Image (cartoon, rainbow, N blue to C red; front, side, top):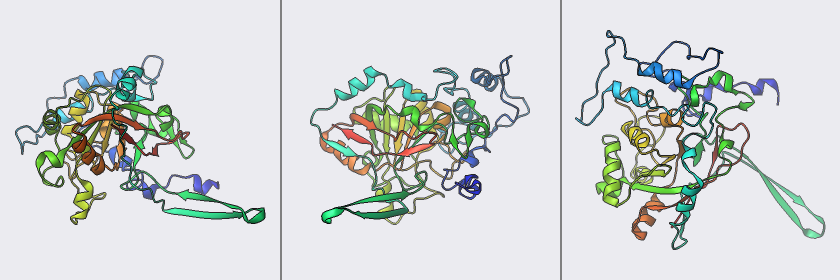
Length: 359
């Protein structure tokens, strides 16, 4: 490829790359100093966590958001994404993140949930922006056809899994690594999608927000909150456990059918309070049809995508969850064996996927 084509396509930073650059300038206060290092000069995630645990200067004013008495202050939200990071939890060089919580025993227990063999896909129909075909004739009237796909899977349409290198904030990407070092035009060198090449097979739990509310979809005025996920799980008779894949159904397709516009601007979805739920319950993967609710009352560009680089939680974006919600209602249970098998892409920031729930 010509060197001019090897440069970063900066015009696509916020749309196609999921707004990673926007995350680099967090609205909440963040340290502007260089990352802390050990005496030998290497980066130390533990030292960075210790720095964030230090009390802020007395002169710093931290606004609160209290439209609902259950809403946390801005300082509390910031602490979730600094003091409670999983950096260093599985070693400073770990690239699997919360997927480490899916032990062989966890996967085997998930397989034991299969009773009827019913399978439900959580993937949307994949229609590449570029699709070229080539027919090749063979002797005797035989022939074959091959095709070429050209697409950017990050964004609002294709069902895909985000790798841990996909986003970052001013403290760095997963494990505090420097994106300017770890990501080049040749690809990423740390936290890439092939860290999950063995597949993600675990217990899945679906949270059906519209059915619980008695409404067709989540609205911009009423985003999903962490305490609501807890309430819905209890009402459904299921508990979210460490290593689970948490699938939150918000009714995106019904919202669009009703004339709603779901894209990169203001939109309904999950409030940042759901991040605390995810950390409290040690979720390994978050799958959703509606993503970060916007605008965010705390001024965060991607309030929920922060679980990716702070907690190491895999993100299953643009999942088709309406059929799965219907299947859970028909089966009378909201737990199942969940399988997400990303492509084994070298240096990739993610992968299209066809996740399967099996009852």
